[in-house]
Image (cartoon, rainbow, N blue to C red; front, side, top):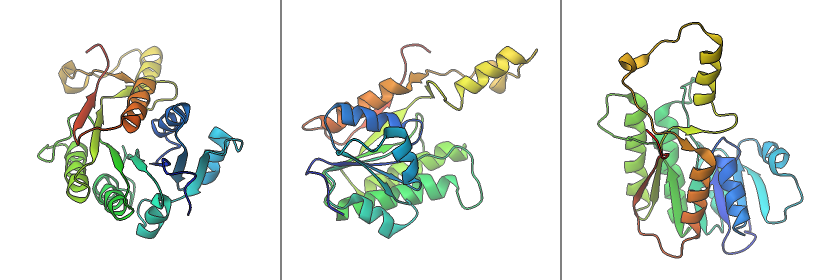
Length: 221
């Protein structure tokens, strides 16, 4: 697959809650984008067919050949694929560890210049939480495969159509009582999804960014 030019960025999960906003910010910065998704028709519906610098291609991060094809000729890659509820073969390990490592390995083989891996705030391979532990293991797997990878850890993100805070607010409006998880002591520092996407776009455009971990949180706890 030929790239549109030598600065094309492949975005895995480019039709998701965060991913589609990353795509828009990259395009706003003049960067050609290749959306790699299991449902390329969704990319066409979201962004339309009129942008010659925007491709939507079929790809499955569980398939090595598929990942390699989506990365061919790319300058950079953003892995924005995530999973919040396990379902059959779609597990936290298969998505956040195995698939993340697959993308990183193929990115190295494709001579990609820059890899941005989207993880999560508090990622820790020693955590008792399965989700947080697999996020942490995924970071280690990515770094082992692609040493110069940039790790992005967003806090809980909010925005139109988010699946977490918007749902809680809806329930708070409708229910007479609402359970307080963790004795009500759990504190969040929500980040606006557009701000996170813009920061990722800027990170991709920077001439030189050393391998590091960025944690993105909102202005208030």
